Length: 127
Image (cartoon, rainbow, N blue to C red; front, side):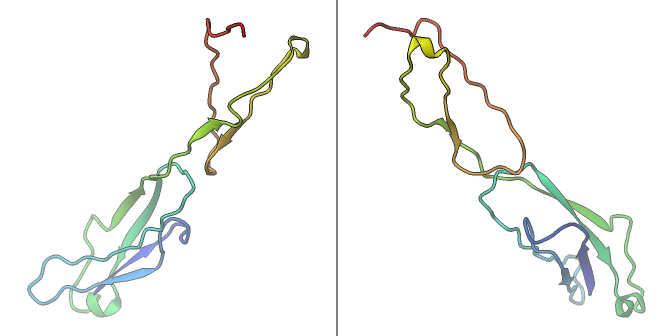
């Protein structure tokens, strides 16, 4: 048996802990499954590290870890943030000097971001 231990903040993006991989007699491949936690917050790509450790019982049988004893896991976020005008229709008097447009995002993000609002020339029409 060998164990994988995670040294990053767990509980938000993956389930941390120790996971056991068992190599049956004659096998050269084993695997462990680490649960990834799906959320609804837009996030940047996040990384965590898995570290291979050899328990004393396996070490006493001549099992050692090789040079590739760590793995980096990149969690790519699939959540997108949709930004819209709310409302989409405004009325303003010329004398007001300014119109304030309100934007809404459909979900929070774990990072700061900027959007641009562009005006379109030639769209002012008389009614």
